[in-house]
Length: 335
Image (cartoon, rainbow, N blue to C red):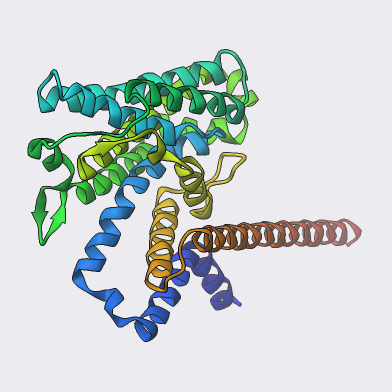
């Protein structure tokens, strides 16, 4: 009984890694070249940008909100950094691009916290605004740069052919993990996501924290946007299509509840890895476009169903335990 319970707990914590392992074993038999060093480096490099965005939105979703505009923040910040290169140095251009996301995040936070607009509706509106601004500043065309120093920001090889971008992703994971695990900001994210009204009653400055979570999400979104612009030396308003939904999918697959209050950074990392492996696997198998969306959707649906069933089983176990406890108390009273 104890072994079964321990196995169930272990499977619940690492189910995404188990699914990833199954996919990797499948690819080992079907396409062995999938495990080439160059391809593996490409996988971790390509997943790093979406990974940075997902990690950055994790606290926001734990707090019970989400940011649909993240893809538009990504493209606008990238465009700002490249356009700034025309009149400023690389460090200044990077700073302008990254800081622009903080301002956009604060705007989203004010709309949700102060004006009490649902986060989906508010960020859906700002998504259109930010994308429209990107079309405006780029004159409806991609903008590009040939600056090697700008490209080095994301793609300079640090060790073993691994670019800086991957290390940025690792640093992002560590930062948010420390915040979620050891700081008051992280604890309040769980508290606000669990019961926002109770937090207000005990004096927690909910509005201020919500704006802060949106600002953090915007910061990581713009950092990812500048990193993407640095990687490909270009920016365009169409680069951010569906990124916001993909990021939310990775976070939900990783175990963060859409209603807030539940989730771990480690689970989100597993979700990011699983989606990256799936995307690369479908490319290797020649299944692209709608097939990728189909695989992602089926995966998301499967994980959500698993979580729903797990929660239901846990509730049933608690009910049985409560009934057994009541019966024991009744027997003692009768005795």
